[in-house]
Image 1 (tube, rainbow, N blue to C red):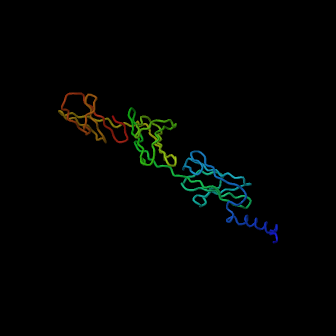
Image 2 (spheres, helix red, strand yellow):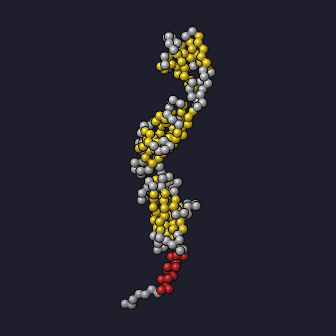
Image 3 (cartoon, rainbow, N blue to C red):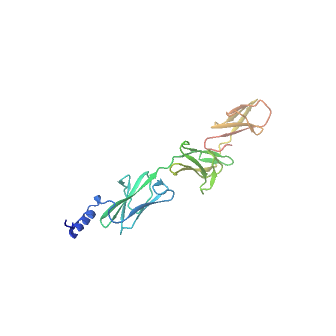
Amino acid sequence: MKNARVTPYLALSFLLSLCLFPSQVYGQCGFIGSIESTLLGGAGVSCLYFDQLTANTDAITPTFQWLLDGVPIDGATSQTITPNLPGTYQVEITSEMCTGTYGSEVIDPPPLVELMGNSSVCLGSSVELSADYDESSYVFQGWTDQFFEFLSNDNPYLATEAGIYFVQISDPITGCVGFDSMTVISNTTFSEAAEIEIAGQQITSSPAYDSYQWYKDLQPLNGETGSSLTASLDGFYYLKAHQMDECPQ
């Protein structure tokens, strides 16, 4: 049997064909490539908004093109990318006329949470902030202020001061975190002082307000939340009334 022999010309032609037709040579260009995920994520699983992906390679003067679910991302040609959509990320690395596709980093969406409540607080009072989320799927992590100092694990939370409040939840399966924030401002706009008219036992206030609460001897009267009151007992009566988004008088 004769020994098989490949001529140098044929071997060189084969190598040239690999580099001249990169669509046929993904991953066969002779250089290594990988994707590194930083911050919250780890290899194979990352979290949207929190992770930065970096393409690593030993290729000479490489260029990069990031892909999302196999489709090139417009303008994503740097070595790093911060994903803003969930899906599977890969990177095409091109060097010396060869292109290879590397990595497969799955970016998970964050759990959804919505912070609700009044955005202004009056001096000496509080506003209730609440987190709306799927309690059957996610874990409540708590509240922090604008300096990310922990405030409470209670939901809802009573905010007594102006500031930026953050609420955070987590997905126990992916480990990803979802958050929302609200800016609470100090409300210094006071409702117009009420005018009180007394006719016998009938006490009436004007002008009209959005809410009323009558008091007797400094104690709130249950159910007395209208613009008028029948004072059937001797005592000291007063009214706390205010317009929406204004502080009570």
